[in-house]
Length: 239
Image (cartoon, rainbow, N blue to C red; front, side, top):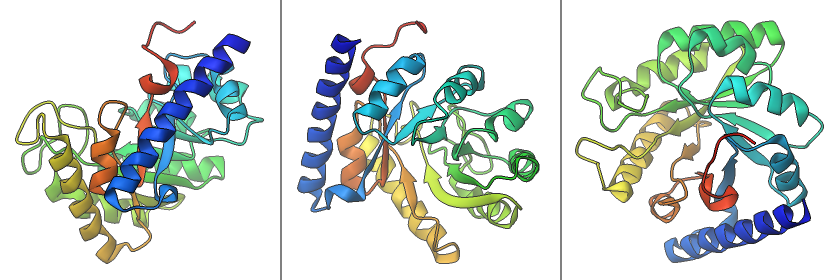
């Protein structure tokens, strides 16, 4: 475990250097960007080591893995983000441990999350996942809602009991006009965020960027970056 801790510490330090350099290049303060470590496929023991090393935000994308892991780490001072596409039959479980759901993209899911949050006696932060590869009114290939539907779904979240509209999220699209243009995609997300805040000023989160493109996200104005491989290593099946 000592070797793994040292490996994670070194990887975290390298990611921290990248974020700090990107912030400096963009003229931003380092504390404007929050690192979320995506721990999917890695064991609870890694989550514990990350917490020892100062990580406070972790993310998962599958409830069947996240729920037992969050339960095992319930004593740690962590904020849990759910970032995967979420089916309504998993909402009740996710609402029991997630602090923020970053992948809200349809009215039916908003209603289910609200019901589950109220039942659990919790307030869930919600990010609206924006699909930058989607045509008007459609869903994206990696989940999310087309930009033209952002106001509608955002209003639904903001008015739902037990939910708090936190902001927006995107995954760099693999097709469409922004394919291979991560910086432009993230800049578009920041524009959408700016428009959203005219009606919802507290919705300040902009979650964008992963291991390969976090610099583009920071340059564009992201407030949160979701980094997995660069911290934990190339993914294998859950150990």
